[in-house]
Amino acid sequence: MFDIHTFLRDLNLIRATNPLVLNITNYVVANTTANALLSIGASPIMSYSKEETEELVALSNALVINLGTLNTQDIEVMTAAWRAADKKGIPVILDPVGAGASRLRTDTPLSMLSRYRPAVIRGNASEIMTLAGEAGEAKGVDSTRPTESAVIGAKALAQVHNCVVCASGIEDIVTDGTTVYRVNGGHDLMPRVTGLGCTATAVCAAFTAVNKNPLMAVVHGMAAMSMAGKIAGDKADGPGTLQLHLLDAFHSMDKADVERLYLVTKL
Image (cartoon, rainbow, N blue to C red; front, side, top):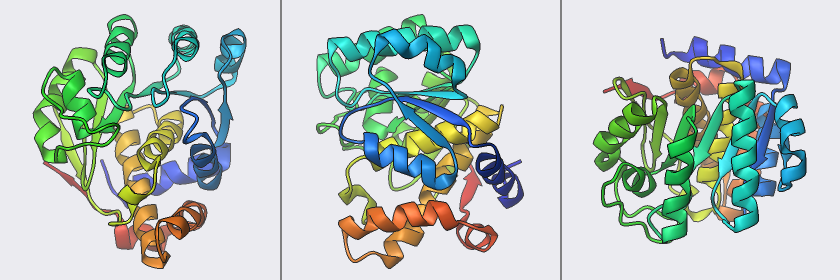
């Protein structure tokens, strides 16, 4: 059941238990995503070293693999970490940043998905459609397709990999291949700040760390991102101050905010 009570339960669990989220993420967003995780109550750790991945995975409650700044060394680290996460049984959240924009950004997630099972794949509509074998029409790392156009592809991708898929945009679509939820909210300024999609992935990882139902966890993670974005956007003077207010919104989000802004519907 998706309602404010289950959302608040998960949010309070994150704040009470401070789950450790290991991030093998891109250099552009590492600081932003680490601060977002801290603000919501989780504990981030960032790594780019293959030599330490098995040790860090053993300590972690969730693993984020973000493909935003790909190179050969990072791909090796990601592969080693995912293999270790599979052995430990911790959820892996894959963010295929820029899939469809280049052969490397497309082939890498497809290769990983052929060997390992994610708990969650979260990307924009173009990225999700690319991985599903549809024409995503990526523009760099940005989407050129509306989220609703990715619903069929998202469901198919979820079914193939037995996971939850989230296609994010003006509205977010979350599906396990059968059930589809839509998360509304956010703010018009959010696309003007780099890395907020990557931030959403990290936040979803925090919720996945405390909720063993990945569909529910991702709905809650995207709802948290949407609500925090709305709170921050209403206070911000522009993209720069949006980032500041976003961290504050994660930190201070309470029952009154959730009752006012939680916008989740089943399709």
